[in-house]
Image (cartoon, rainbow, N blue to C red; front, side, top):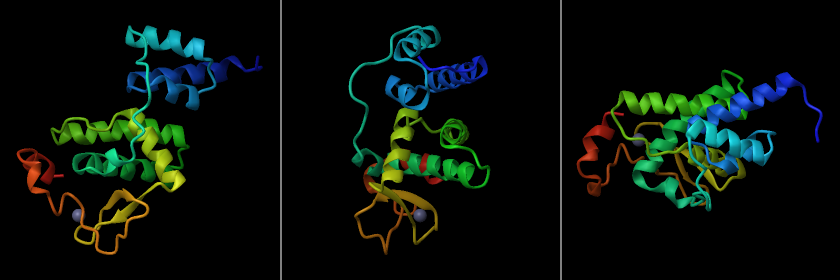
Amino acid sequence: MRNRSILDEARQIDLAIELIRLGARLQVLESETSLSRERLLRLYKEVQGKSPPKGMLPFSADWFLTWQPTIHSSLFMGGYRHLIEHCKLDRIDALVRGYRLYLEQIGAFGLDCKLSLTRAWILIRYLESGLLRTTPCRACGGLFVTHAQDLHDDFVCGLCDVPSRAGKTQIAVATL
Ligand SMILES: [Zn+2]
């Protein structure tokens, strides 16, 4: 049993509650807090009123590269990196604040949430590990999530070159 101050434990509980409210899966909580699995399970049930979902996390890297998820992921990463680089937040605080920022932004645009907090957490890990990276669009200059191994000299993002299959969501997202 680790020896921890009450204040530190309170901070860990606050962080876990915030992550649970934002929709974090149990694996995220276990990775990002020092609370035991038993305590996290109890906390999750108290906050959400139900047990956490079981099963694998959505680990597919390809998901981030499909049209709408790329736009949502890139929007989130823009805020996250700003918080890390300019506000000097640590990773977990930047994840929480960056995710709130993302929710505010898509809310302002009237878009549905495509990127769950758990997926945002996985995205950060994939970018840190070099599986994915961000690439500037040659048309708008924005940074977008792409596969690390693809060639990107002539990359055009999904907002500047909207796929025709995008259909009626095209208008809503094109105002981003
Ligand atoms: Zn673009």
